[in-house]
Length: 245
Image (tube, rainbow, N blue to C red; front, top):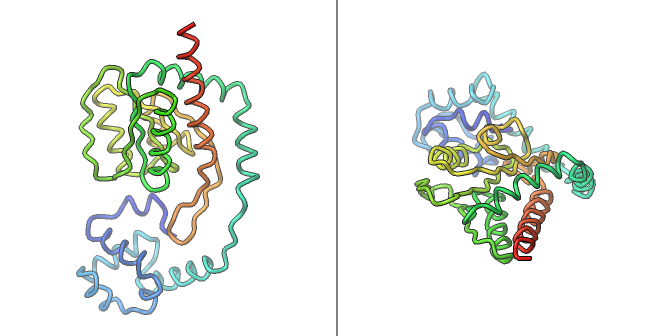
């Protein structure tokens, strides 16, 4: 119900309202606008402006849409990700994809250290990526805290691998922008080559998995991301091994 574009358009007060609605949806659909305003400590004008940004003419229409959304979620059946992953593996077998992976490997191999960045599910994968790379002798660390201070201080051959399904998460874009302005190399792993993050990156590896959500949560499969990370790590390891021969 709440698209990334709609969420990004919210100001500070509207975002407080959004957070309350997400956590109390079953309660909100039965509330009066004055009661909601009192509960969140915002004005009714703020609520109406919020509703307009959610493409609703007023609070009553917003509640109807919210109720319908909740009912749909209760009936939702989640698809197995096997087909999605097999389709990705088919694309990953192409020459273009292989060349893109090799280009990323060359940048990673030349870097002194790798910083993985991700938030939410991508944050968990970022931590895994840093651990996996470090296990194969590539010094790596990760950031999954959206409020972590990224100063962007330049180290020799600095590289960030940034993970984001949408490529539009404001905090991720902010982190990447700071690093980019300080001459870091950016490799992004995302679901869309047309995203803001992709446009900022030196190399973008896209996997085009079908978006899946449950309630307000992004549950898009991370299997392609895991494959990409593990394949990159192994190829970089092999590059280093070949240099020793």
